[in-house]
Length: 236
Image (cartoon, rainbow, N blue to C red; front, side):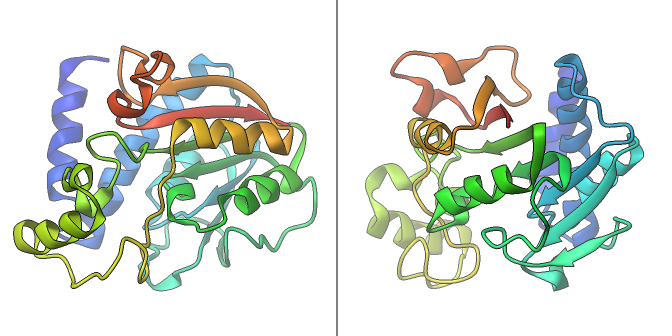
């Protein structure tokens, strides 16, 4: 990936919380990069029925639609959604309001680490996928430098200290734990995700590091610490 893409990604990430549009632009740019990677892996979007779980401001859904997919965008918080999809569904990721075998592709980015029962998400994804269907599942592993989201990198010092320091340095709300309100965070690791996926009997096609030329996600022992954002490509 040319260096100019990393520079743009950094600038968008830095300004993403300034406005809803800034966050949408950040999502859309990341989605465009992910879609290029998916195409290199022979994942066809044109004409595919795609479910975008945790669609947020709509940037991923917008990019998927622009590449010819028929997208259903789902999020539990309808107020945050920038209406950039032809179809938006206000629902819970662990109780998807769709019939079995409804989608060719499920796209799920940075959601699983916010769920207390992530195994239910995996099973729901499997249920709504068609036979042979593809799932793109990604998240920042908890023990990576950015894995604790608004508490990074203080999570290496323990939960209580991370919360205390995040209040001081980031001016975050007065959390009492990582998961005490909307946006709650749970410890999700690459090894745990692998176990949940294998228990569901979905097939792992590939594991990679998002937007990075070196695939730290497969590094023995160090993958949890070096992989800033892991990508799983799964098949039913």
